[in-house]
Length: 420
Image: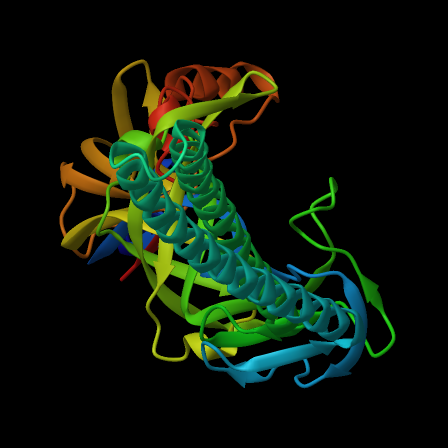
């Protein structure tokens, strides 16, 4: 009897153990899965920079296309591309033969007029002497007629001769004035010929760098003053100490751009280098091209190594329109939206509503709802299409599959970069 009781007792203990294991296994099987539904990211503090992007070409602030005032043939080019020149430095010489001949002819014409002037002065002097002689003869004839020693007609003839002599003086003086005017014209002609001769030597109008030389020895150039096409370009000079970029910003971003803002400049020639600049001017007038309105923004390159840049280089610029430091940042792909409501999913699967601020296109500022160190899903989980349970999960997430949804143009206009 005791053996039977013992056997029954042992069977009960075994059954109880099996039941305990079964209940525990079922509870473990029914426990929710704690493994995250995807990769997670830790919420940290960092800096977020909002930028406005544009592109343009690097150009010097002062660039001059040098042309010749005189036509002629180039006989000497004294500089080459890349040379630095000072204002007034001789650049090109033209053949001066024609100009020298014209100057010699002008001087001969001036000398001839000077001789005519001397003759005119002598004529005036002779006419004055003749008038004095006529006046004396008139006085003698008049006294002789009064005393009855001479005929009356002689006195009348003498008076007539005096009037003729006076008129002759007026004529000679007019001829003298005309000759004096001719001499002034001849002097101007000589000065003009001297100027034309000087213009066969082309000088630098500004101090700068030679960007391009468009002529060589033997080239015939036309005058920029007399040619209807504007004359021949000899070379191009530029002041490379003051480089600028004119970029076009669309109207959605122009409201955030202002003079004085910092600019990051990138060029293909130096792919790993960022040059610095500053916004100098924002055009008040927009330009419409293909139904898109843009505004010109002039940027001054103030980088200490600006000499590495070359005029005509294409440049991509990012204007720093706003910068926030020591703020909580969340990846933009982790943010889900349902209407105006935004939320993220924690690693535990919890849906956490958040309030957000600015974005740079890859990260977004979190102003409320998360704390530093929180782990959230790095991107919105993709709902399963298999079965009603998966569909229900997708419906509960709302528009969560597209983190851009509901964020509007504020996102596109804030494209830029961020950092921790």
